[in-house]
Image (tube, rainbow, N blue to C red; front, side, top):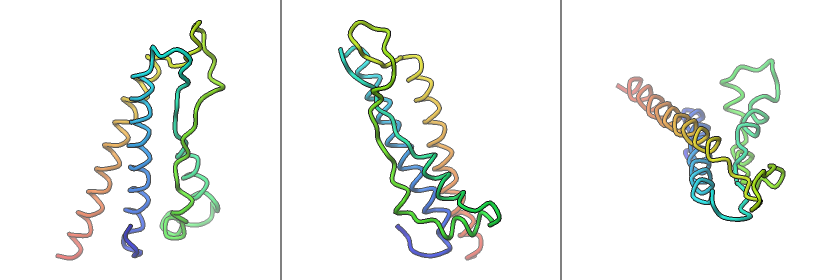
Length: 129
């Protein structure tokens, strides 16, 4: 992790991209286990952590929120969905259609995050020139 105010946005985007990559792997694992009896889907919670970390005060600019963000609080939480109801006799709660849509959505999110990180570095290069 880079320690400088110039990289505050990059550090936040990096944490978000890591969480997105982990979530993609979890969803792919859910899809792979769609026919495993008793399997419970897994997912990851990151957006709420980010929202809580950046949304502490509504009267502060986003730049200050990002600068003051505690990156140690932005560790994604992997959880097993035991509450998800299963309509199958084998008690597997993976819905293949939902998982495929979530995977596609997460892939788009990951691509947007990595593009944003690249854009931040391009802006820095422009300033240095």
